[in-house]
Length: 433
Image 1 (spheres, one colour):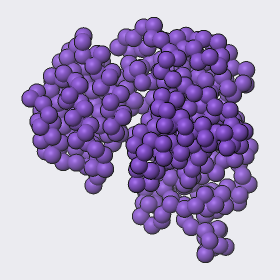
Image 2 (cartoon, helix red, strand yellow; image 1 turned 90 degrees about the horizontal axis):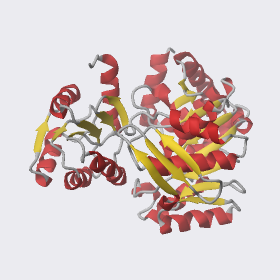
Image 3 (tube, helix red, strand yellow; image 1 turned 135 degrees about the vertical axis):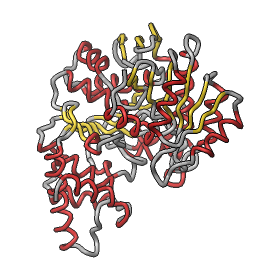
């Protein structure tokens, strides 16, 4: 089997299996000799910002000279993006090798235990491949981002992380995780392990109660991060400089390459985790790592005045509009929007229309059976705004139209990670002056 066939197999996996118990994943790891036990692991869960926190930590550790693996999801263009070693994406060759090794184990277990073992799901398979990849590459530290939830997430088979992190919580996947912030936080808090410290977003009291209850049960020291712990020193169209004083460690000034204020909370959680690790990282190590972090599709400037943001739920869009509102004081704004049908896209559109004085909006549709037709999205935009709304079903044509409308202002592309991924792929294939 070649690389392309392996990727096709993985993408087809959800069609013939379902989510399994954690014991199923443990069985594969046990057969592989428990490579995860030989790694220093950092485990990150949450609704929003967990990918950014993972990327900040990976950047800090790599910049400080520590061999660091990073497992995140979803990918935007290439599935290999989910596995990084020292901030370099896994090669096709090692990806294929990992796939073969994991599938060899799966086939053995299916044969030996046909009644108790099941084929791994899409995410379970990728997680197992990640563990193989990181051990084969000699990674000392591994930063793991959960998929959906925490308590029953495949990554939660790890037994003793150096530190756990729980980022901000929103009402997501309520059919699986619960109908309230507290219930969802309880599921995310399932990653907290006996005696292992946890850093968490302490903005909401109900969320904090759930996390502290689990931390108390697991005798885990808890570090709350709150908005009153930072002060913005400078905010440009490229970076934010801020001072942070959590009370746990000495105050520190930090600079991040982002225009989004919401990244400050993510940055502070990563900095605090780096300090809690207590592995000799200097303030300079942390500051340089934070400055160098770049995270695809999260308020990412890809062309002059063109920003991609993967905000794809209510709370993500609320944070997006906070940033856009600040920038609109100095420049015109154009919005390129698309969404998947599982999301509250009317609520997202209403939030954008009520909070941003954009010059025009261009709506398009992703190439998936999960797409919302661009015509439907355009109708909703026109329901909430009298500003210009253009419907362009083709993403490449929509992007060209949005670029023309942008002029000398800013173009925000938002609403779906699928949209961001399509645009990233488009940018790779074409030259833009």
